[in-house]
Image (cartoon, rainbow, N blue to C red; front, side):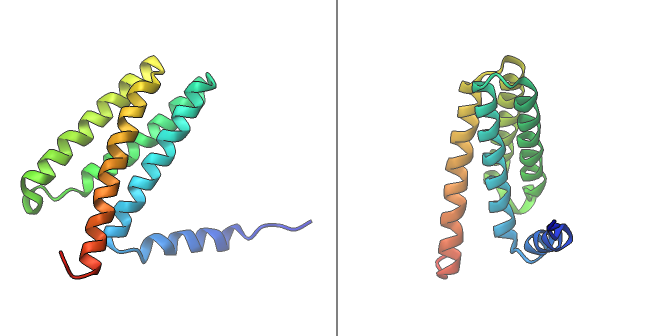
Length: 131
């Protein structure tokens, strides 16, 4: 019987985070939030209450990480606006979780997708020396 090399996988995964640029780390947070929000949406559609709850809580945790990554002093009004938007997303997720409401979840997914897209564009501009 073949035993998978979990230690190697964990080491690879840890290294992926430790060597990522700050820009890439934020992008990874957006990807994680979108992944968990999508899982929550599918769980609600399947009436998997427990699965939806877990996925929504994971989405909230990632959004809290996005909030903690904001530099309100250096980021100015943009950071303040993002913070407000992230807290609004948390409120939407709480409501989605209480009511098992895919509409509120879809609203969060759409906002995250838009911000992620803008973040990706910033990364491209910085890489090209335009930022």
